[in-house]
Length: 277
Image 1 (tube, rainbow, N blue to C red):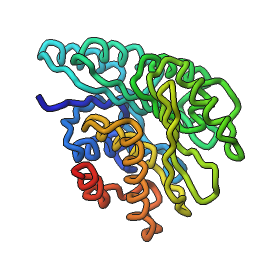
Image 2: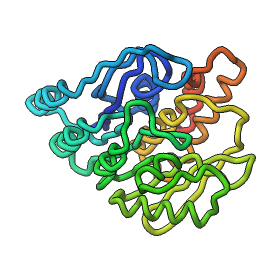
Image 3: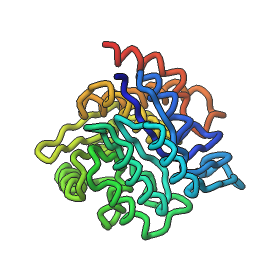
């Protein structure tokens, strides 16, 4: 039986993030991709867009799950992104009640970057998303999200390998089986991720590009989820996802007007070829 993944996150109709990234990328990995929108926004919420519309879809989630259960629909993997505090108990029920045997749980605790929570999240949200992280097969926080999950000050730069590995162990203690920490860098010219399985830490680095672009976290998480479902190990999936992000950024660098996301579509052939190797 082919694998079916359910991704639960928002639809930002314009902005190359969340479901508009997850659905095509995971599908390109050869994985049937089902979606459960947590909300619908006209654009993403990052600087550059203002006056965006927002519709919360929490009230629809139970009815959708009940229909799936009646229809005998279930899933081999779950991948969550941008969700609200009220949705977390519902998501946990969906995972428990529609999972096939051995289903993977991949949680990207989307809530913050650059030391700050995203718009719409309050100070209580990190402790609630930690409940979703507990029992997950993999969590994918960036450094800011890691700090909020642990209730610690954000350390933006100048940290040591010891700090990263202590952070990984603390995140693992939240109850996740594996941690992939993104945005890790020990040198000015590199950027990468650190993977921890409770016993050992592995690192993967790319050359740092002189650019900062919206949506790269979603591109990373989506390609990671697809590669993991294709049978890659966690370090292999993380390395492939990091490479795909770089290729997506390179495809965008020459277009200064394309400020709101990365042109991941142009890098999909690269992703498909790498998965076939």
